[in-house]
Image (cartoon, rainbow over all chains, first blue to last red; front, side, top):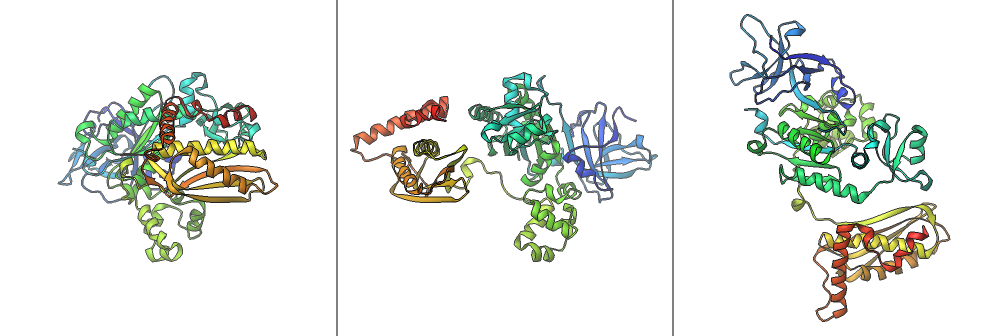
Length: 116
Length: 397
């Protein structure tokens, strides 16, 4: 697998209200992503909805059935998947299933007076 | 290319615990401690802003200060400096104004920005927001929270998700899915009463509201039902209105609830004059003349009285309006009850500047004096110039 990975996280506060249904959850990105137009960053948290139709342009989470194989890809015009941020696209040998669609991304920063 | 670059990119920008953050920049010892800005508990003060540390004790804005101290005995209260907050806000808006001219300032610490079409300059909206946040943090040491989406409504909810000090970007086309699991009360426009009514019908999430039959919602909530349903689907076409596109103001005024109820006519006149001068300064700053002045008095028993007076020609002149205001106040104060609140409000606004008659030399001199006063007040604050009648008020209360 790549140097980046996704792991499920629980969110507090108002954001946590998004994951109060069975088909919604959060995944956090761990590791240094490859620079591309999605500009993924270590610590980015993705809000995911599962069990919905996938459309062209959607950012999706796919897997092969094991938590360690969760990966992000974008759905292209020909409905194929393009890996983003260093995640590989699914291969023919690995039957992939869409786990959910990314509806939003949270990027949080430490507050304080020590700088940005 | 990311498809998010093709549609509208609307940002809702919110300065985190703004008043408290400005106080912390001025006094770094306040970092990490429960801090509130507001009036003293001895003078019926209320909390104007609370730090996140104070909020953990249940302290929130608009709460009586005495109650806040009971909830958090270690609370640090700062009186606050609205002149300073205003300057800090101006500095923030100058910085974010470099990203787009389409900025709609909602309050001193909140705004909507339309970044549509700026992709080639700043990258996608998330990158631009990130850069904006860093710039404000590095240059002003203040934290921004930003919600990003294709419309104002969704961005506003998204910024609530990102607090404190974060960004939340809702991907284009995903607005209904983002809203679906959320409780109905998070949507702006649904207050506690409507939320309870919706819950009575087992409509507790926005997704349920979005899929409820339209005729049913119209039957229960009237025309608001249809609009509420559209919004529950994450649809909002309201444009971001910069100042030059905003509808003209219809009125302008100020009111003040006193720390202690008053009965001294001289003090009340002084207070009224202060409110009137403040409103006249704003009239002139915004280039308005007013035709009608309303003076409002609320007594200690909460009985409220209002009197209107219309001038033959509109004016923005303190002295002209002061004569009227004084007469109105004298006529109103007939009850033998203490006064709790005074207010002034100008209506019948029209664009223009008071000039006086061409040959009225005295008035021309007054006009020039007022212009100089306004400049000094703008530079050094409202208290820098005061009329003689008001000066003694400083020591009287």
